[in-house]
Image (tube, rainbow, N blue to C red; front, side, top):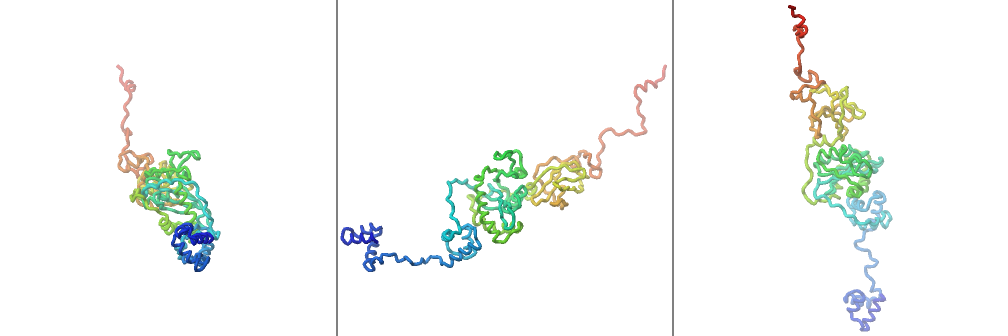
Length: 443
């Protein structure tokens, strides 16, 4: 106001034009004229902004502010602001903006301000199409209320950040890895590569911090190699930045969503994650791929099932049983041979803990997880290389070779004996030359 009075007096004295007076005040010539007229009518009070002291027409009602703060304190304590604002709009009909909500929560001391970000890091470019690279990792946290820490196994596409599989297990390992891969490969097909950390179920590493041993394959490495999938090892958490950021989001959101849904049992929680959470998460955080083509390759489910499982060789003992852990798997009677004693077989353990015994490419028995016989059903082709079938099996299938010593007459047709036959009892033996000489009469 003092500045206006000084400029006004100089204008009245004629030392300033109206345009120059407006420039000194930082307003237009027309605005200076308005100030002059209001000053002449109402004095200094006429120069005050008429909006001062009046509430904005866009101002959020105080009752709505109180309701929002009460909801956060009572039902959403600890949620991040973005997640909380999404639920406000979807579940409570709240129509005001995210920035206003964040400002009010900061002002009320319910949410801390985010720390300043560090130096910029350049992110690795995404793969151009789905199926070119999948990320798989596990995160241990108290995912379910009232339960101890559990592992969440997640398989995500690099191109779109779409989560194809997510479930909670007691502990991450080979079985959980096969379970996740079987879910994804059955539904979508085989990807070009799989990106994981260097966990012991993924890779052999002689010394911590050194390169993985590509020659000694784990069960997972053997299955991926058999299916033609490149297995890429990450050597630092920063290299798996996309997975690390995903788990940061899941630990912040999924734990609260599961608690809000009242889920504390692993089976029910996994079903809810698959049917409810994942569709909403992928719709919220998924991104379109740069190319519309797909890198997935379809493969028969039977080949997947026999590849994505634990496989170990065993030798059948004298009781015609196979040892597996604390179980003794009794092999059933076979139409091809009386028993498999001393035969080398291969035991498959599937993600659901069921077992099967293979002799070469043929499945000869299936068992439940507790070792009881299960229906054999149609034989599924095994995608694992196996040793050549025994001579007994080849002979029974018309190979024309003699049976093994362990085969019996009822299992394999009797073959003619090879070699000199036993002489009959009535035939006399030809005497030697010395005897013949002794029998000759003397002259």
